[in-house]
Length: 625
Image 1 (tube, one colour):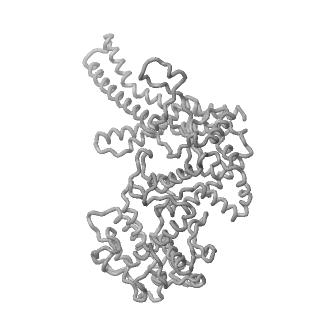
Image 2 (cartoon, helix red, strand yellow):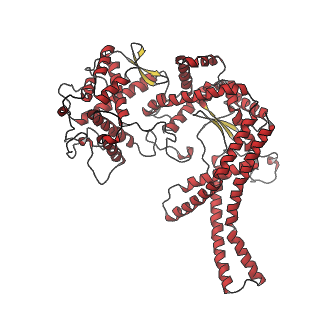
Image 3 (spheres, helix red, strand yellow):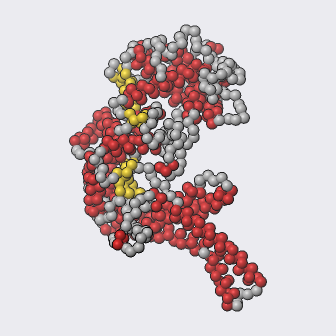
């Protein structure tokens, strides 16, 4: 460790912290200027120098102004000091549940000659950082100083002592990394507790966090005009101060990071290079697991209860497929960092539920429609149910587009989907939606007939315009307008597929808007005490699916249902690609281009050939949800 580098980084951070504090001092100086002017005027009157009607009027005017400015300053300072800073939702890890982990972190802090973190928490993300949770609104236990219990007098508040920040560790690191790799990764983070204990840096951070929290308070909707005016002034002052100290605060944090990194140079330096490779690999596996595996389950009202175990399985599968990753499997013989926990299963379940809340907006705990699912039950409870729910929705929308052809039975079949999406050779044979019984967003495909629509593709799907429009109506019209206007949809596709895709978009929008705004997936509002404002999900994983993507997913689900019901195929879970179909014990990996050929070109030939080769009978009825 080069002491010169550490000292330079710390001095740079402290100088920037002093610059932030100077901004605060200048603001206070400006606030007391009217009061200072009033003191001068009063002193002049007392000494007989500033007398007369003009000076008396000036004293009254400046005095009123000084009182108003001081009251406003006191109110703003109170809000800045009392406003609750944003706190990252995490899973706390007590020392009783992870004594080995706490021992490792304390040993690491001792080697780095810095204060040990006050606590450890886990986050469902591939990152680690220090978080200051000493604000009274966060509710930390009050720490008493030495001899505080011996002070005379009852009711005296205990004296607070400086509290180190909380160490937040990404939960995927604990399950994928080995103990030595985890120590090497968090060494620069733990080293940051040293600069955090510096009084000037700590004060500057508190000031910046207070301004940020004040902006959140000012942005809270207010009903009364007086409250709105006060919040407008509050927000303007907070933005002005933040703008003045933003650059200094950023440079201060860079200096703290540089000093921490320099201090951690000699701690497992060689191992840290290898561990950084595992950080990138864990991030890729975690992102793939969330978007391909967890997201379909969350949409079905199920949350995988062992996500961290899943990321290990996903990265192991990656190392099996990728010849460049063959060396990673040899690491599995070493002790994993999750062994530092007394009950890794319960911690994994808690972080998995938190991940569902952060990335999808699920309820805070299990419910009848929000149940945990293990990986053994995932194919049956998630994959199969997702396919059949999509197939049922596809047939409902298809029923709303017009009467069922005579050659198709009342039971749902894949053949009907193929015939509908097949592009006819005669343009006059393209069916148009009937003018009777249009699909109403409020009542669904089976609702009462509405106003007759004009002829043309998609006309029957457009709801009648009313004065009282709902959010579902707006989303439906947006989806249908994009389908009717080819210039707004860059994806290739036939007229039939565009019509069906618009209907699916409207149906999905209607189902999503059936849940009240600000509610969770189960229709229940989350407790506000657990979150620092904002609607769930806080970090959406993916943008909403386009109409073409929705149609592709639904047609693929219909094919998979037919394969399961008529050819003995089984739903399965692929750790890297999510839900998959096993035909004769092998994964059906060549289905997607054939479905796209049907949707984009109206050519069912490749898909029909694939169905025949797999022994799937599209004319047979399938089972829906």
